[in-house]
Image (cartoon, rainbow, N blue to C red; front, side, top):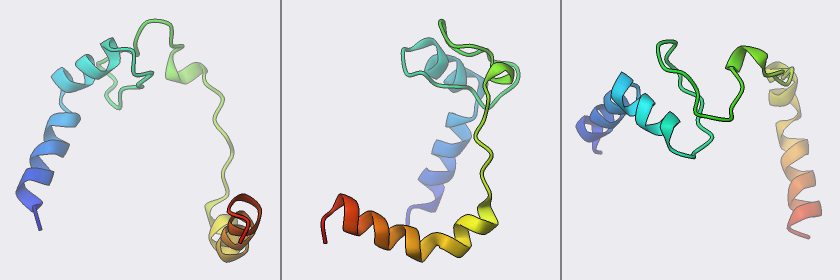
Length: 76
């Protein structure tokens, strides 16, 4: 529907200037660019232990997980 403005937003958000602005503000933002460092108080991304996420299993379990979430969280 608004493809050109969406492309412009993506182009801007991944630009060095935008990445620097976002990382300098207290947004707890990790830049996607290697030439921009994370904001003050945040460790380097290389020091963060990431969750081991099995996308295939998650896809296989998607329906069951959603049904359980709806039951337990929404009470339906």
